Image 1: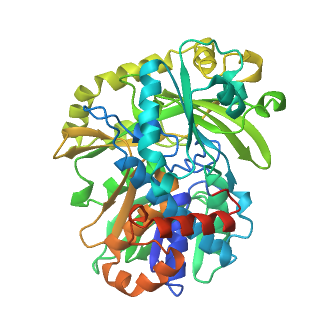
Image 2: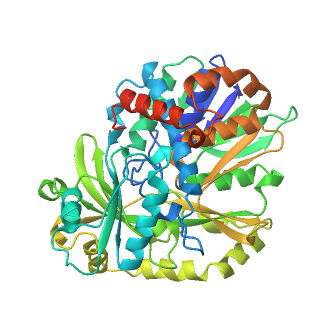
Image 3: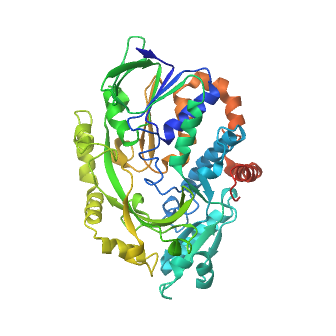
Length: 491
């Protein structure tokens, strides 16, 4: 029987972040990490399974909805940006402590842009620009509806584009491209250098159960030998991406009831042709079609992976009953039980539009995908682009006071036990970008007494912790400047 202080399940960006935070705050604690694959960061955190956008609401139009009176609601955009600033500060702290030696190995500066077509959308973007550009977290944003200026900003997008309908874009230089797979591997590498940390790859968690002292016993199968091992800890974090829900259900916690998951797969079009890639240097986000879910926002991304640049366009949604890319086709069926069957059925009735959308996406031919790409790149050639399957995302379905039974949640959700001894992370975007915020939330829920003692250390690592940067422009400017210098980014 292995006994430890903390068990982390899943070796993705969330476990990497929580483990790193805890080793800074309680270096004497013993920690065991279990990952069913042969290395960290191979599922949702992998660089080819997400777009790598440092989600800070600089370009994502779905974070700034237009209200009935025609004004732009920027509250969600500000909240998302605040969360990303926490990540930047923590990463910067790790660089100064030499936990991360070369920040350019995982983060690169890249302009973030929003691009729209049509008079109505151009008016929306103008109002969005006016609302955001005066905010301390969005300083430096530019707007243009001049085709000549837009061709300077994004020549690949503007080449071959007809004059009508009108187009417009915003641009901000302080955006980032984040290789979350590389960051995950970096964080786990430094964790393994610390005392009292053991990372077990090829170990699949099969069961989680309470023991008499209210700690948790985790049964793990060693996939190399086939043998089962039991490990106990007073705290368990389930950060297994799409695999978190089935494990949460095994705990029997009341908090695990009336929660379901809806898996959505994704595809990207990828271009490696250097003659095409060199003509685009930005992450350009468009506007989703009316009635389409947030996950369908089209975007054209410059990616920097292993020192090579490529372009990604998408995402194209799809459906697979798997909860993980390496999961089972029976994952969805096995997740339905007596505690959540009514929740799942209610969601099925409510989400007929989403079901229709996914069916349409599944039926898309390669030529139809190229047509969607040519809405962004008019001169795109078939031979320059190939299809790549991205990661699986499991959207949370739960009963809520506002949405009622079977409400589909688009976002990241933490579920924790009443006594704080177990927490699980469910959901999807903007997850990885807000990992530090989410894991601080886990610490607050699960270690309330220790958090009183850890406040000073947290403020050392994350100076804006507990402060709204939106209310302190001087501090916001200071933090953005300092983190840009440390991470070798543009302010």
